[in-house]
Image 1 (cartoon, helix red, strand yellow):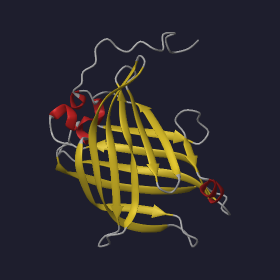
Image 2 (tube, rainbow, N blue to C red):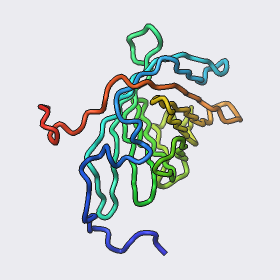
Image 3 (tube, rainbow, N blue to C red):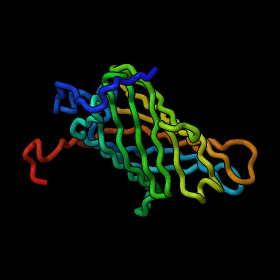
Length: 213
């Protein structure tokens, strides 16, 4: 029996256009953030290697989104990561953090310019201060897709991100990207973690606020 209604077209009768008031556990993450003590544990031919990094994350509210009766509130994000003292981008990532109030579900979509995308999810309490999302290669919904070379050499089989919201207004994350690397029998855990400090408030839809685009 389906968990969904047979009516897949009718949108919710009431939708609050103020996204910032409807983000559930994602609300404290809205804004522009910097982190200066990032740690990346990455795979190399001679074994794991540690790399320090700094990053900037922009998390802007989007207007409510519907799929018929399904309703999302969310944040559009951009991540730029650099090695300390270097201008060249070390890692770039774009996507959305989404909150579905009806099911208490948080979703993260992500795309990186290595030819890879993923979508992770978890059921999360609206006031949760800590939550972990998961995507798995074998999933038909919350899954992972990679270009043929990455699938050949660095097959990503699982992605997890654990977010912690702190009482002092900061938030942090720890990611674990599990890969099967060609020539190695054991899975490699590619780990990234950082602590973020707010540097600016979020910017809403400019057409809704009257700010020139």
